[in-house]
Figure (cartoon, rainbow, N blue to C red):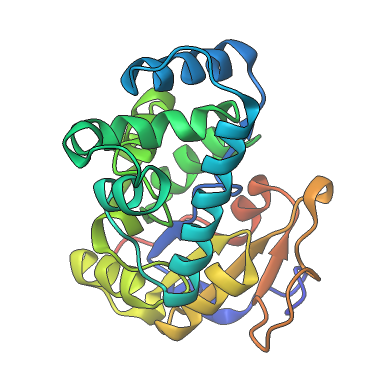
Length: 254
């Protein structure tokens, strides 16, 4: 890891800064009204009343089995495929397919609602003002969750590109989501920085795509820097998003 006191010269070459979402720009926190509302709505969509705890436990088991398979193969199935083939294969496809996208959002909301990570709004606003092109590259089983969240936070205008595994069908650390962002931005990978909170997904992915800078957000309350055994190490480790403003100064007009 390079010292924070001696920011490498090649930071000057960075023109675009891209972010992971979950755990990096936002957090999911328990929120009983959201959680209870999600459970109620799932049962309404499935045309069910009261169900035993074992029902939810089995769905969690199936979802985790899918997640492990998807991550092992670095692919992302559609919401319809996930719900009809993995989570609710015992329900009629004709019932589940039309509601699969909503079910996916509600499935996440069972755990609570999403809130911005401290300092995220101020950091994004400042980096945009300083002349950087901003974007998102994130794993997501849902096509709706993150776009809705960006709208709710008022962040949509900050980002020039939003790449989700649910659309490109590849999961990080596959380089494909990163390549797609580069294609849309029409930019050299060496001029891009990526900020994430997982070494094995975020840093390995951006490194394999040739990004110029990989930064790990490793907040004190949820340390991940020693969590994973990998030969890829971050160029920098930060404890808060506000530290990015010390790294990325105002870009000179070109």
